[in-house]
Picture 1 (cartoon, rainbow, N blue to C red):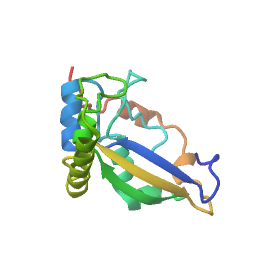
Picture 2: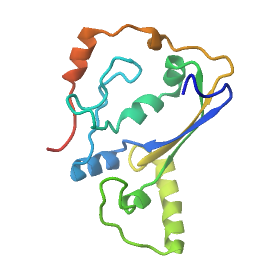
Picture 3: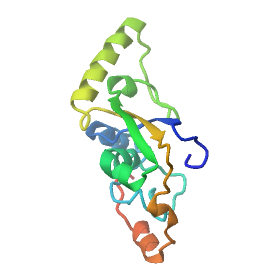
Picture 4: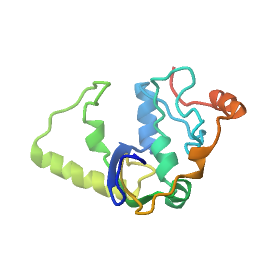
Length: 170
């Protein structure tokens, strides 16, 4: 995105939020893992499960976006202009995207009620209930390459990242 998006351009991101309930669901579903250990701002860090290039780390959005000041310090050419939390009951009943799960078809009026409850729970208690987050980034008019983008690969760091702990049910 750094080289493609024009200054002033915006990037809209809808991503998972590793709240307590999301982590519980991930463990129960045994679908994807999460780890808060990798340094997501290190271009050489391995952020998914070592040895499985198709694995996901559902904590990456939290590691990137929970600390707005750190995000903008690490990636100075981007400014976070919007951050909000979404979804709880609605996501649990969505049926999934890749891992197809059971869902209950609901009438539109009930979906509106659930949306209101979800918005309230996710806004007031995001660390507990919010299963999705919405981020809008704007490319600054004066683009600055982040310092991390110019670093050389570090063999010691790669070896350490491969041995990091993961939370995923077997």
